[in-house]
Length: 478
Ligand code: F6P
Image (cartoon, rainbow, N blue to C red; front, side, top):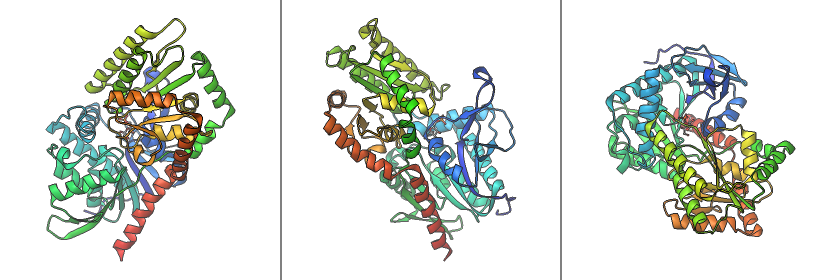
């Protein structure tokens, strides 16, 4: 223990995915593109400013790659075999932990072989970080795919300052209890000095589990972590750090003439309807897309919304397509969209414009500018950065945000039109209220939300986390 070879980097981010993904030969030239999801969007600006390295998987199975530079960042790829992608990523991460941590919306599967591979792959990520980190470096581990990395790192490199941030919800102990490896996961996380969560509720859930399943002694936000021989190893601190977005970047795009022109074009391509409603999600069962479509379909049926006056755009970016629950969701969503459009479309007008694609950020901002109402109806979501991006893009203080109360973002965007997406009648009423919101009321709400988002951008998030980690280390050294 403690004798692993060292590297030169003072700051290292470790996440399942690198900020870039290999473009598969079937889709292009085998080059690189930005990885999906909010994590990269959140951390890329931080990494661009720090002189550090990023350890992660590059998205292509069975490919060994040497470290390389991309967009001003040093990237250290971790190789995963096809079998590991199946068992660690699609299996344990996305068919065990993901549904378990999201209120068991889909049933989690528990397989001992997946768990073995999860441990093995977590070890590999920890080793890659340990080999790249300089003496006393800060290592910031990200998300549920890598919950054992803090413990493995502390074992091999006790000199490091270790942070962990969980981007998804942490479930209450009553649900977490189902996990056969619950003690090992809590112990893995407790290898960190600072464990960050999106919401105070997630933090409280974690601390309750640490107490219940490890018998840890918890005082306020501090967990006293014993070593196997009963000595005190260190104090791990758990706290909420709600993540945000690169506000400046979104605002700059929202003011760019070509992006504004593109928004106008989108409206005109849709026949300049009075109202455009927009949904933007990874195609994931946590996002409540069927609930949103059900509510919208009923509003069309009841004549409360007319296809001549309103259009809904649903961007559903492809995600985890080899996982069965995601395939089933895709069939359900596409079936529903087909039925709604079959019933309500005219030659000129489409009820739901469904786009199963990912788009560059410029196009996303144009969509945000084109949309009068953004619909976020997640059944459970760690944060939901789309809601924050929409607010950042509405530089004229127009537009309405319908936001599920089950997102982390609802803690901060209190002036959104909050909904319980399971309550279809309530959802329909809120959608109508958003469609008919007076410009004055919309502007009041949007101004207040914009103040919140402008004040709390992603740089502040990472600074808050890293300063808290530093201060804690200084206190512990005394
Ligand atoms: O925030 C949750 C998360 O799983 C991230 O870790 C990830 O970058 C994003 O969603 C996209 O998911 P995936 O990496 O499985 O495509």
